[in-house]
Structure formats: structure tokens, C-alpha cells
Image 1 (cartoon, protein in one colour):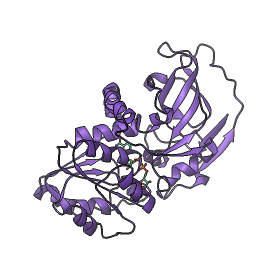
Image 2 (tube, rainbow, N blue to C red):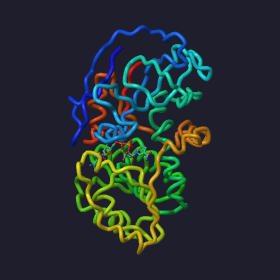
Image 3 (cartoon, rainbow, N blue to C red):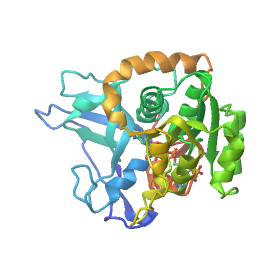
Image 4 (cartoon, helix red, strand yellow):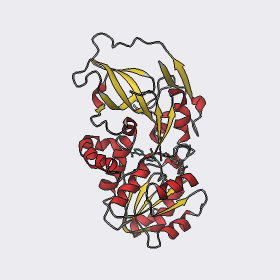
Length: 335
Ligand code: NDP
């Protein structure tokens, strides 16, 4: 049973050597009297929030040095001691980074009922990032047809979905990303109206002014720092900023200051943070909305897949240098 162990707390950018790949022999059997599940891991998800768990700060959710990495993933139930689950069920939720797992408390796992779409999608568009994009956009941004929407980290797991939901809503949508390949994707696959590469156009204020001569109504914030500051200068009256994440800040010991917050006052902007988990209870409604878009080809979805648990750490840390093109998935096993 291959496993990924977290070596020790991380300062600065995480490195592959912060993780240890081990292999342990296990009995593929639930312990006697267990109310849990024996799971076979199929797909693991690399998500930016996992960087937060690597910090040496008191939190019930931090990784402990020497313990298994965990994160979202998709698994198959091999044996069940829990009345809500049966052998053969497919589930997504928080899993340990190992090929086979015993999960003693499976109550928060979500059962997968729709299998006409790739199972890996439950790490992304049909899982936590999809819920983030859907409710972050529709609930937090209060969008209206024709509004001007800006999405940063736009080609990633969350950004690509937000951009397309905004297009479906009839908005004008601009995305930023950090490579030419991603810019192509935004324009040609996801249908963004306008795009810019923040690495090639470091004057973000000028780039935003070019893309939004009349200003921004909605900013879906994934990046933070200088991007947020430049966006604030370009927000329209009564704009909304949905603070989904600030990935540019996750590896800094001291986060950057934001200088233009006074614009919240002068432009009467609502800036609001949110967490995907608060919307998990609406999963059924979410699937009802998003599955037809996928089946009818109204939303395109791009994944970046590495194979094998041993390639997980490199894929995970690659999020912070923009190595991933689309949703970063680690494929562990076919069903
Ligand atoms: P992505 O798939 O977008 O991967 C991360 C991307 O971020 C990279 O590919 C890179 O793209 C970009 N990036 C990395 N470092 C920087 C930097 N210094 N400046 C600008 N861009 C950078 O990740 P997700 O879609 O999963 O997550 C996007 C955001 O959403 C994150 O901030 C994450 O924390 C947040 N999030 C929040 C949730 C919530 O519940 N609130 C839930 C899920 C995600 P590029 O090449 O374009 O730079």
C-alpha cells in the first residue's frame, strides 16, 4: 500500500522533499467491529488549500509531521461496516493519500450516483472546486446579465468553471493566467471574451483598463496581492468581490499589504469571503444544474492528470508555480 507522508512543517514554497513516499503491507480487510469503510483510492485532488495545512499553526486540520497527507479524492468501497454504504459504492470526500484506506468516520463522504461522466470529475467540476465556482459565482457575486466579470487564475480548477458560468449568464468575461498555453485555453476552449497573461503584462492596472474600459462589476478573487490592488482601482460602483482564495500569498511568511481598500467605500463595493463546505448540503441542486451543462457540451472542462501516488507531491507543489494546466488530478487506479 503506497502512501504519502508529510515530513515536517513548511516555510516558503513547498518542495518534493517535504513529502516521503512509503510502502506498507496491509490486510485488505476491515478491522472486526469496525463501523468504517475499506476504500480503494481511484483519484486524488491537488488543491491550493492543502498548503495551509502544511503550516505550523494550531488548527484541527493541519498535517502532523510524520502523518499521512489527506485531501479530496474519489474512492470505491471495498468493504463496509457502515449502514449508509455498501460494497461497490463510489464516493468522494476527504481521503488519505494512500492506495487503500480504512476510514473509521465516513459520515462526510458523498456518494456518487452519476457515472456517465468521468469519475475524476468528482475531484473538480463535480466536486469541491465545482461547488466553489458555482455558489461562489451565483450566490456571492449576485451576477446579472451583461455585467463585466474578471476571474484570476482563470484556467485552473475553479476559474475555468466560473468563467464559463459567467458566459452562460450572459456576462462579459475576462480571465488572467500565467502562460501562453493557458491564455489559448481561456480564449479557444472556455470562451472568455478577453484575456491577459499577468507575467507578460506586469502593469496589471493597464491590462485591466484595456480589457475593461468601463470598469469591473464582479471580481472572482483567486490570487490576491497585487492583482487585488489593481482590480480595486478598476471596480465600478456597487461592484462585488467574491474572495475565493489568494494563492499568491500562501507561501509568504508575511502577506503583502493591499493599498486600495478605500475604493470599497468610494465605489460602495461588497467584498465577501466564502468557503465551499458551507454549500455541500446543496450538492443535489448543484448536480442538477451542472450535469446537463457537461452532458450537453455547454461547459468544457480541462484536467491535468499525473499517474501514480509517487507523482502526487510534485503535482501538488506544482500548483504554486502554475505547472498545472487545468484541474490537477492524481490518478491512482482505474475502478
Ligand atoms: P488552480 O487549478 O487554479 O491552480 C492554482 C493556479 O494558481 C496555478 O496553476 C497558477 O496559475 C495560479 N497561481 C499560483 N501562484 C500564483 C501567484 N503567485 N500569482 C498568481 N497566480 C498564481 O487552483 P484552484 O482552482 O483549485 O484554486 C483557485 C483558488 O481558489 C485558490 O486561491 C484556492 O485557494 C481557492 N479555493 C477556495 C475555495 C473556497 O472554499 N473558498 C475552494 C477551492 C479553491 P497561473 O499559471 O495562471 O499563475
